[in-house]
Image (cartoon, rainbow, N blue to C red; front, side):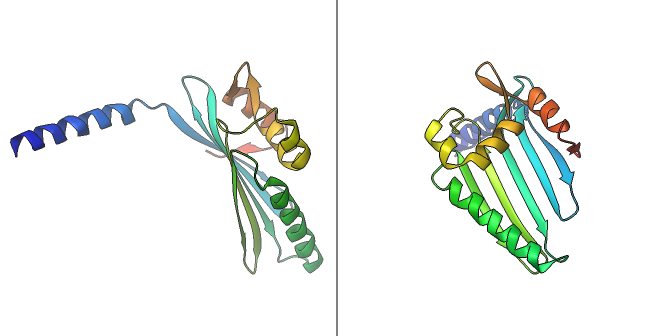
Length: 158
């Protein structure tokens, strides 16, 4: 019993050290327009200035105009159809009485930035990713990415 307790304490200590050393941080940016809001969330390593994940959440307010509702839903569904099968990209979509939502997660370590076939299949996704993620050498730099989206009038919220 003592051996199990000692081993458990040792493993807990190792886990604490490993988790405590992580420099991974989140940062959020928002662009609010008349009928939609876009939120970008970066997960990055402060020390290495490298982004590991980008989450894009686009929320359309459909309470204003029914014609806008169908256009927003149609545009969202087109983008979703383009993204099917793109490596490193997952998405969720949600509809309710007031909002149409699309959330896209890009795993930067799996996403193929230079894949010509995927770029041709999903031009909207690739244009958005290239605007929001800026590379320096072989890594996606948080500082360069932040500067780029601030030029698009996003506001940092966290």
